[in-house]
Length: 281
Image: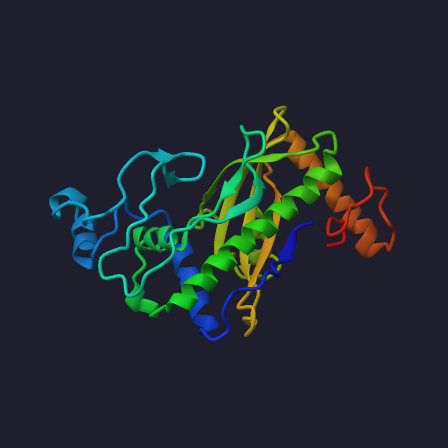
């Protein structure tokens, strides 16, 4: 449990992998951004205190509506092509394998490529900065989805091993917070010399209606980009240190890892690890 390398395949191998990495880094660093896609002139006016309204209003087709606090998306997201968009993008949405809290069988649904493009614009990103191709965008979507699936698998390792009484934990809400560096990431930087993660997500997991648990996911740059898969992200997934139960779980797993990695002993796990869910990962 902890760090993991995402291993899903992407659709194309001809785009510039480093360009995709730079784009993902800049997207994470941009934060939540504006409530509407802004031109450079509108961003300058907003920073001067004029806001979107006095700069002439949001551009035509900009997102408007109520924000869902569970995923920070609009209740009726914008699926229209943005002004000056250089190529069309699909509007279909892919269902994840991540169970959605408050439902019987529903799972979370990933943004469509068009929604993702519009969200990038809202964060201040501009196509001209990286000159992404349509295939690049599809690769970014594949990496985004693969990272989320891997993060959920890491959550399930913690939940299945430490809280087997809940057969099906579900994800209640999530948000990105790249500028909020976690204490663990600061320790790894200052004491161990690691780089800071380029992104952070916070997930709230519903433990079968008995408890809501916060997980922190740090996204680290794993080094050289795989020229075929375009993957480079290493995930560090763990419960937040914000409750006695979470602190205890972190201590238990740290003890297991010490026994296994340092002493060479197989820890006495509460349940047999399933395939892909082992404490030595």
